[in-house]
Length: 357
Image (cartoon, rainbow, N blue to C red):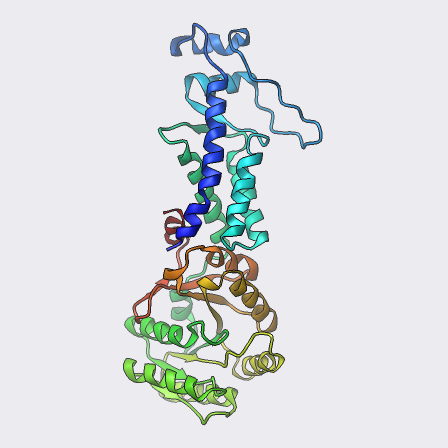
């Protein structure tokens, strides 16, 4: 999982490690020892600094005194990095993110967060200088991924019953299978679930969700192919009310997102059924295509969250980082296989640990 993402980060780590080694060997103590730390810090003539950096054409950098640098570099084996020091490493990082299908605004946000983490702050030098790069990047990714945190379990628990959840997305991305996985997830937690075959555009879609309903022993509400999807979902909600069911999970048609008729149909379904939650489903391996589709669906029928399928096959990891940021809505679950239990509730720490290897 995310193999390509890990490989792309090597340029950033190598570049930053090289700069740290340069900084730690550029200043050397002369007749100094930890016991004379205070004296050394007050006698800069005993230390040979590197050439004074120029500020021409650049923004003023945080003021770091020579004594601070000397103390950090000599006695404490720490390093203080300036914005100029990070120019090449941050460029390497932005290229790595873009090549991993991270959307440009998200890549810029991550780079900004890494810069804030590193510039002007003491960083202790351990056995592996790459730890500093990984630590800063991990912190930045968590900052971006945690902006739209959401507890799905809490939402379902507190919502008036039946809770109506509508699934949208293009065909072939695992939408119907994801509905079945969520149904199993809810059933395992004691909820009663009704499925609605709202994709009346394809006979195959109705048959597919019917098979899942049989395997999971769930009630399915369906109409004939070509019927009104809003009517199907309405009937499913009425059935749930009459039989005291907790949750209605409704499928919808998934023709191309550029199809105006599809988007009009989505708006009608939302208007008629008034869902409590609208979930967009797409596959992680689609990369920036998935990000763009999420954006377009969100503009047409504002989504409340995303499920990313086929995350186990995603080498780049870009869409997992980007979708929540671009839509402003959380990633709820990650699909990590074909079986019903292969659904992981989204957790930023879990994802970052796997992105970083």
